[in-house]
Image (cartoon, rainbow, N blue to C red):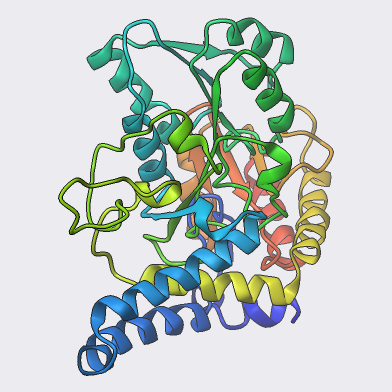
Length: 375
């Protein structure tokens, strides 16, 4: 299937030029229909057939299989969540923190990768170190220096601020050599480029389907490296019948891996939509998607001057950050022209997220509008 064929089934793209995939990706009809079908089957058919709980568990299993295939992991290493923020909080709550522990993050993290650690700093006395970066780049020398006292590193694979790729596998090697765990916020990667969590080697990878994977809100997921839960005696803050080996046992026992991070009853609809969106993107081919994103992103960057372009000139992702005089006003003016981008808090700029479902005409429309506003 060609990307434009799938685009034509996205009602949100019938008018205007959408460049905000890094925040939320409008779903194709087949994805919404899969979510609706799962809900209807669960509510209309399952009660008098296999039962609502078995039907939901089948949907959960199907989603884990699809996610595992997408990330290059085993299904048992996948836990279903609501969002990236949810996944990070589940990890943050599972470790036995004390005042001698240190979390290291970069200054490029989204609030999802900032607030959980700020709370640990406030409530548990955990030291939070922030690695400073330059134009979306992280120096490995700084990682090595911070690793000496680190308990856990929190880093993004693709930065939401600049669209740069951080050297995840190198960071993981440094952290592991120092005895630290690594949590990767990968939400900007799946759906726009291939992801191999085995290659990264991280202990936790969190993401969600509602951005580049064009899935419904609520379709979050996390990878938990095999063995890390038992090695570090991870005890999540919440517990339920999906967290344990036998919910009816006198003495409960946590599920051995990622399963302990799931809790209880949840709608099968969002993750049924996610499974369908993964199938759709795999029909196109993730390499094909990334190649098209690269071509369109290069076209956009070619029209932006060096003094305005804050993202790398060479391709790293579909996230393009552009310096403008008044980002919020620019977003409003572009919206009046039917062009959707977003402003960023840091850097003070606008960000255009280019997906394979954009067109050259979309890009040219954005460039024309920017030239008109900033000749």
